[in-house]
Structures are given as structure tokens and as C-alpha cells.
Length: 477
Image (tube, rainbow, N blue to C red; front, side):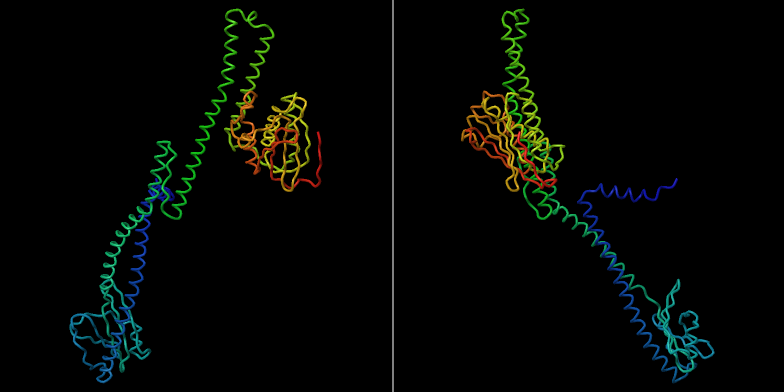
């Protein structure tokens, strides 16, 4: 069964990809040197062969002229041919009848070619021929002399080329081996920062310690890679620190409602087991206890939802769209009224278009209204306003409560922060931190001030966008 033709290249590709970068660089360096040596050998061989051939041809022409001069003086049939020296030059005279004369003891030359016979008959002045056979190759020069022609030949000697090729082979092997060693050394030195980077990454993976930065060394791409990984480690450290703080703060915030819930439930169970539930807890006390349990469960549910929102961070599947912020404000106010019917919300909103995530923005506005509702007196509404100031959409939520102390202002939007005056009020301290995160994600900013009614004024500025349709409408609720 024949093997598919594409199987071998695929196997070679897999083998190559399985090699280390150091091995690849070594192979590439050795291959590049081998190719360079081969190309240099080919070019040098051609140049050397051409030079030797030109020298041999010039020598043959000079010898032919000497022999032709003698043949013209003495005649081609009587000219005295030089004795064969045993090697090197060979001579021959072509007579008018086509026969030949050669020195005694000289090896036989190839038969006279038809082109050489035409030179002897006067058809051409001279002729340079190259005769390559399986045994010996000859370079033969034919020159017209009197009524015939003379020929001077030389055995084509390839030994200089062969010796040169052998020398180039040895040099090539030496260069390939040296290139492989140099490539290995250069690869090892160049990849040393990568090796240290790999060791540091393995150490971080094994120890889970993100505090140690990788030394910033090397240059170019390697330095940028190290800086990127150091930046990634710093981001991971910040993320781990944030997770740890979130877990600690969440455990602290969950402790109080869970403890209260557990004590109330244990009280009910203990009284029920004794059979004294009806006598020990009158109907009014039981109702108050059950209401407390319901409030604690609701508080836990709210805290769990807010913890989930905070833990998600900026990760959201909600897409950004062009929307009218007034619609978001109206929807948030409606939700606030349904959740706390005793809180009055006064809306004064103007259509302002923004690019954002509607659900996230609605949650932020709802948290602002909920926060103001905790402080606003029963006879005073929470005022919610939306207007445009140039290229900015301005949201303002204020109450008629006691306001925010100056020492608490810088930490109002911090996660789990609750002022001393808010310890007895329901809440987790996460609502305004969620507002801050949503505003940051939309490129806006928050501010805290005192309202004209003496309470707190929370302001949010968001970048406005061009309206989808011309014209604006004002809605007051």
C-alpha cells in the first residue's frame, strides 16, 4: 500500500513544530551557512572553470600560430612535428587529402571533425572545439596553414576544479559545524531572558505568589514581553487583593443579619418545642418577630444580589446602545416606587441621549434613589433631575435628610463603606459603589454636595450622544 504524498511534509511540519526555539535557530543558522557555502562554491567553480578555459584556449592559439607558421614555410606535408613530451600538448597536421600526421608515440586524438576539415579546405580561419568523452576530454584548436591545417590539443584537466571543490567541501563542513555552534550559542544568549521568564512563570504557577516582578532586561520585543507579563501579574495581584477584600467585607456584612436571623429562628424553634409559643409570644410579638425575619431575609437577598453584581465587575453580556436617558430614569423611578411605596419620587427629566447599557444605568439610578429614600423624611420627596449641560448628561438625586458629613464625603462611593449615622439603617454599603462602577464604565464621574433642602445631593455626569431623531421633549412626572 502506497503512502500518501502529503503525509511526509505533514510529518516533517509536526516534527519541526515540536522542536524547541533554540533547536530551530541552530538548524536555521546551519542551513543558512550551508546554502551560502554551496552557492559560493557554484559561483567560484564557474568563475574558475571559465578562467582556466580561457587560459588554455589562449595557450592553444599561441601554440597553433607557431606550428602554422612552420607549416607554411615547410609545407604541411614536410613540416617537422615536435616530439610528444609525454603529457600536456598534442599536435596534428591535416593534409589537403584529409589524411593526418601526428608525432611518433603520441596518443591518438579524436577523429577529425567535419568543421575542422572545412577549416583545412579554407572555409574558415580557425576553430576551437571541445571534445568530451567518457575517457578523456580534449580542447582542440584548428588553424588554417598553407593548403591544410594544424591542430593543437590539450587534455581537459578537471583536477584543479576537483581540488577546489574538495577544499570548499571541507571549508563548508567546518563553516556548518561552526555556524551551528555559533547559532546555538547566540540562541542560548538571546533566549536567556525567555528562559528566566519561563522559570518565573513556572514559579508563579507553582507557588501562586504574584508579588515578585520579573527583572526587566533585554531589549526590543523581549523587553516589551517582560513588561507585559509584569503588567499582567500586577493586574492579577490587584484582582486577587480585590477578591480578598470583597470576601472579607462580604463575610463581615453577612455576619450581622445571619446572626440575627439565626437567633430569631432558634427562639421560635425553642418555644415551639416547649409548647409555649402561644403563651410566651403574644400575637403582636409574633407578628413583629415574623416581620423582622422577613426584613432580614429581604436584606440578605438584596445583599446577595449586590455582592453578585460587584463580583461580576465589568463583565457583562449587555450590549451598548444609543438610548434616551430619560426613559431609563422613568423606569428606575417606577421600580423604586414599587419597592418602597412610602417613598415619594419627584421626577424632572429632559430627554438626553447617551451611549450605554440600559440595565446597568437603570440599576445605578435605582441605587441613587434607594440611598436618598433612606434619609428623606416621609413628607419630603426624593427629587430626581436630568438635564443636558453642553455635551454632558447631568443626573442629580437629592433628599431633605441630614446630609453627609464632610469626613464621609471622600468615601461615599467606596465599597461596603457606611457612615456612623447609617449603621442602624438597612443596606449593605454596596449600592453607591455599584453606581461608581457603572459610571466609570460609561466614562462619567460622580460628585457629592449639599442640596438646597439641606440634605445630600449626589450628581452623575455622563457623556451625551447625538439624539437618534431631531427634536427633544421634556417630561415631568
